[in-house]
Length: 173
Image (tube, rainbow, N blue to C red; front, side, top):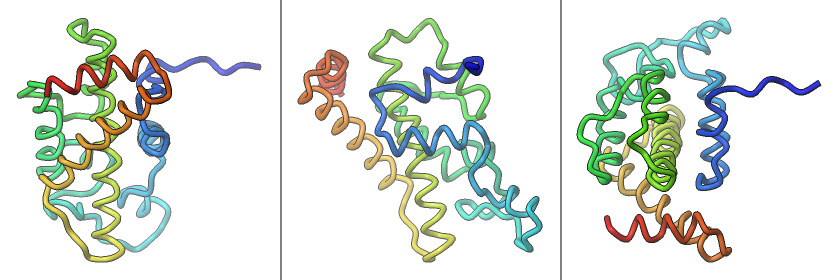
């Protein structure tokens, strides 16, 4: 028996996204990654404090992108495309994706940046948790943009029409 499709599936399972980014975003969409609030709900004795900003409890909704640190990453990344006031709350980001102002290529680029932001922010959070290492929000932002362009080039090199369109799109930025 087939399960009913969900409204967000096309934003997660997009071919323009790096596969490991898709998995991470999918798990966060389901709210299944081990954020502090979830680990505490499992009975672990932890202090629920965001490892990125240190000023609020850590949850998926805080990490993406209410947290002051992660919002700097998201704003810098999406700002490359000219968006100065992107949504910062999880549910509003999904609503933004269905905006009629995006054409197919613009949406693919926005999704590349969104997935990339989620991935690098989660990696940064884990590096701080496990190793005590930190990076600036600017370094993370630059990684996201570079990876989006690299994925687009890889798609083009495999003959993907979307890849050719994304490379042309990214060349204007």
